[in-house]
Amino acid sequence: MTDAREKHLLDEIARRDAIIERQEAEIVVLRQNIDALTRKIFGVSSEKLDPAQLELLLEGIDAKKPDAAASGAPGPAAEIKNHKKRKPRTRAPRIPDHLPVQREELVPAEVQVAPGAFRRIGEEIREQLGFKPAEFYRVQLVRPKYVRIDNPVAKPFIAPLPPSLQERCIATPGLIAEVIDNRFVCHLPYYRQEEIFARLGVRIHRKTLCDWTLLASDWLAIIHREIQYEHWRCPYRQIDETPLRYLAPGTGKARQGYLWTSNIPGGSVFYHWHDGREAAGLEALFDGGGAGMLEKRKVKDLPRIIQCDGYSAYPAWVKDKPWIKLMGCHAHMRRKFFEASDQNPRLIAWILRQIAHLYHIEEKLREAKAGPALRLAVRYSESRMVHQRLHKAITLLAKRSILPKSKLGKAVQYALNQWTQLEVYLTDGRVEIDNNLVENAIRPTKLGAKNWLFLGNVQAGKKCAILYTIVENCRRLGIDTREYLEDVLTRLPAMKASEAASLTPANWLAARTGKKARAAA
Image (cartoon, rainbow, N blue to C red):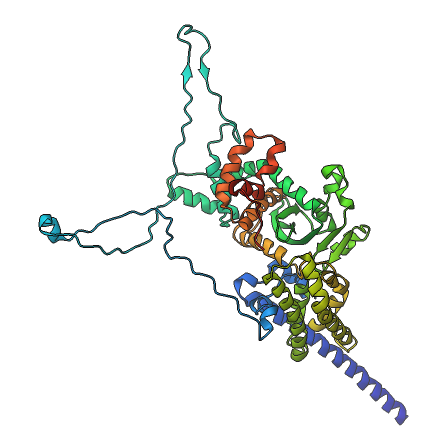
């Protein structure tokens, strides 16, 4: 009887020890989530967690964007002690030389009384920077009427009106370009622009400003399609998606759509709006459902490389598309290990060090302006052994008793799931080591969304994608967005559809400078 009681007590103790061990593991995971939330919410403003992603994180799904600690820390290459520091940028003059000069002379009172008694021997100049607020002006398009002297009762002659964006629209292309520039470059909502214009003496309702923007997007859609065709033809692209909220009448709240972004490293960027995050949003980034085949060939059958993060929609979409190869992003892998650095600091520091070596090799290649062949050779001879060493260490780490839901467990699982895609950059010198360039292209859209909060309706997302595509490509090429839009919106009404390709930002700049344009990396 005593033996039975002892056995029962031992079983009860073992059961409670198992409960305690399980609860301790859950406490570790919950503390990591709380620490991550604290860093994301109370970190620097540019890296705060999107409130829409809080629920995902609480469910144990990590947000795909970098947190404050990860982004605020030095880059991977900076972790190498002997890394050569970048040269400081040359500081621009405080007052640019190209500005017009308004000269004012201050003559002493004694000289004003008796100017003939003094001789000028020199001068001292103090320069200041002045400003004159923007101003509106009226444009009167005068069309004189003429009649023949020898036949005064005949029909009079009058010049036809030039082609315009819309009949009886009071806004010139220059004013519409200013509204778009304020909205998509300076991220000013329409109600703020309405207030600014009112202070300049002209009251324009915010709905009118919005209508002008929609009118311009309709005309610019043909240029947007030309850039889309360029991306359809490109064999290597980086793709990512970002949420944007829009109003849905009758639901009582804003819904969430997605701006899918396609980036060609060293080339253009293209945005496409879709009201969901499912794989259907990828269709327009490739063949648009089979519409408009280019050069009379099936562009969808050409071999392609997509560089993306670990979102499950990408492998699900390419499952039945053997001509498309997925490629991973080392920055996403590094970010997940960095988030787990407090769980095992020494081990994580070693892993981050190996990734830093890979980035250091890539930085030397960029400084040497290496082409695809040289990049492939250097990666094969130098990066491959580091990559293999890193893979072996992560594989051994996976065999340890690590909590699957802990930060380290998730980082290890993410790296192993993505490893085949991560190795692609070792076999192709054209591709980049990470997906950061497309994330940089997304950043301006998030700055705007923080100011104007949401889109008016689901259809506005398509217009927004058109204008962001135009604006971001202008920014990459160093083009003044307002100057470009004013010129293009003036010329488009009189042009044929076949001539629209000459108005893409790259071709527009090439026509002005006389040389091929290339986007800044």
